[in-house]
Each structure stands twice: as structure tokens, then as C-alpha cells.
Length: 109
Image 1 (cartoon, rainbow, N blue to C red):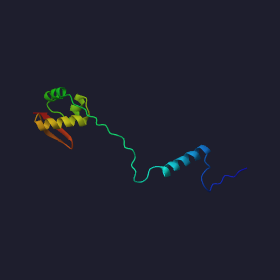
Image 2 (tube, rainbow, N blue to C red; image 1 turned 180 degrees about the vertical axis):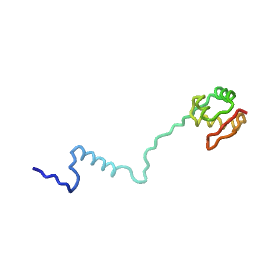
Image 3 (cartoon, rainbow, N blue to C red; image 1 turned 90 degrees about the horizontal axis):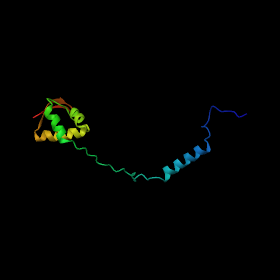
């Protein structure tokens, strides 16, 4: 009978597990050097254009509105709706009347 010791090292690995460990260590050693950079994935610029007719129609019909409401009505992301709204703010077609910390309230001008 074999005695199991409570003390001592870890359990003996199976041959498959030992092979995985060896290949992982070889990849670490023979892999990239400290100065090398990993391959970077190319980022794609996704631009969503707000349908100006639909957005302006919503703006004219609303007493007050927020960026979140505009994005919901125009079916675009909040960042796209915010960019459109900032553009309209510069043109003077909307006014900011209240809100705080990025949650502003606008009215049509």
C-alpha cells in the first residue's frame, strides 16, 4: 500500500498536463522580448449620422428635452445625439436651460 503524505509537494501531473505546462513555459521564454509590442488590432471608426429631419422635427415638437430623449427618438447612441445637439447649440437652434454634469435640459430656440 502506498502512503499518502500530508506534507510535501504537489500532486504528480498527468502527461497531458505536463506537456501543456512545458509548451506554455517555452512560449514565455521564446516569445516576445521586453521592447516588442504585441500586434495591435486596427480600430474602425464607426460614425453614426443622426437623421437631421427626424431630430429637428422632434426638437420643434418638444417643450423641453434631454440628450437621452433625443437619442431614443432618433434611434442613435447618446454620443451621436450629443454631438448633434452640440452642433445645434453652436448654430443657435437650441438653448441649454438647466441640468448638471452632462444631463442638461434643452429648449428649441
